[in-house]
Structures are given as C-alpha cells and as structure tokens.
Length: 180
Image (cartoon, rainbow, N blue to C red; front, top):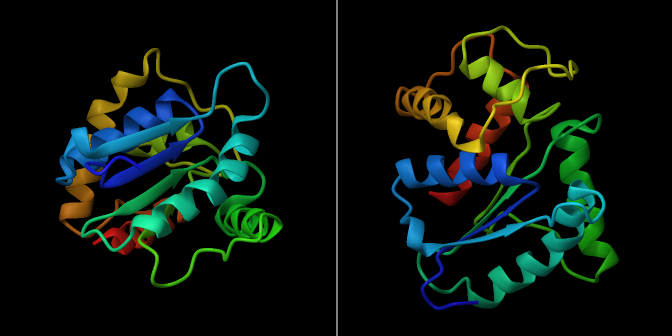
C-alpha cells in the first residue's frame, strides 16, 4: 500500500466510484489520498469481484492501520441480498480466505445501495423509492451524480435524511461514522 494512501475505495463500477469519491472529497478526504479498486468491465460479476477482493483489501488495510486516518470503504449493490445479506457475504468471503471478518476496531465502512445505486439516486432526486424495484433510471454519465452528492452531503450535515429514506441509506449513514 502506498504510504500516502489514507483511504481504499473498493467498488463495482464507475458510478459507485464517482459517487463515493465525490462524497468522500466533500467530507474532507483528500482525493489524492484515495486508492480506488474497481471491478474490471466485461470480466464477470462485479459484485463477485468486490466480494472476493474485500478480504485482500481488508488484510492490506490491517497491515497499515496504525497510520492515522487509514480506512476502507466498500461500495457494492445489495441486489436481492440487501444490506445484511451482503454484509454476511463479505464476512463469509473473509472466512473462506482465513481472514478475520471486519470487527469493531476496523475503520471499514460498507456502503450498500439496495437494490442498486440508481435507487439511491432516485431518492436524492426527490422520489419516494422502493428498494426492491429495479427500474430507476441510470445517469447518462457517472459524473452527473454531482447534484445527488450535494443533496446527500447537505442531509448528512443536518443529520437528517428526507423521510421516508431508503433503509440502506440509513445504514450507510451509520457505516460512515465508522470512518470518523
């Protein structure tokens, strides 16, 4: 791990990466201190890549966690598994590789939009959303998420999500506090 890296961002795709990177930057994490690991396009399941890569990145984080400010953020769609199911998948993947799953001392946050990130984007556009619905519109370009990030950041600053908030976003807000 590069000495200047403070945060590892592990995610499925460019939309996840762009959204998380912009939110972290807005929250004060220097963009130059992020190391981003994205599932390679066209090489199988992005979710599977993140799940299998998590144990490797967790071990790398732990080998350097004595450095102040070190952390790991994982962004992976919940799909049908939801937040709890996907979190269990990460723990099982660690055990399969003989690595202790995430514990309370780890500055590791799971950001698991359920059903997918488009659900979260629709919510941030002002829509009421159902997390089991799969047909929310995609953005034309990943960078088009900037207004969504701004809205989420404002809600986080006010410590209040617009209600009704998707349960996975409530969970992400609690997860984010693990990095503080």
